[in-house]
Image (cartoon, rainbow, N blue to C red; front, top):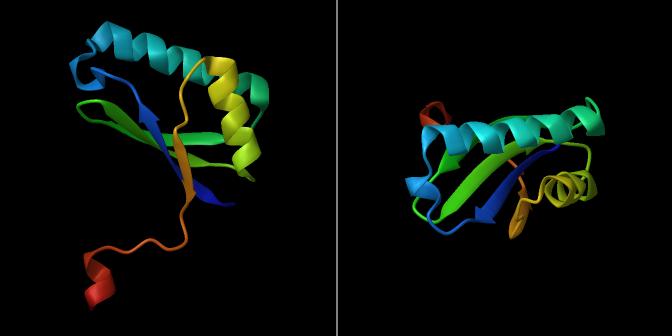
Length: 90
C-alpha cells in the first residue's frame, strides 16, 4: 500500500498544548474510523507552523477526503517512492 507525507500548514502548530493536540488527534481518528481500514495514520511531526503526517492509503483521494471531513489542511501530499536510512549506506 502506498505511503504518503502530508504537509499541513497550521500557524502556531508548535505552540499547541497537549490537550489541543489530543483533540486534533481524536478528531483525526474519528474520521479515520468512518473511512475504514484502508487509510492509516502512522505518525506526525509538529514543527513551528506545520505538521508533517505519514499516512498509508490506497490513493491520494482518500487522504484528501480525510482532510476535508476532519477540517484539516492538506497543503501538499507527496507519495513516498523509497525509504532510506543509515543502513542504506552499507
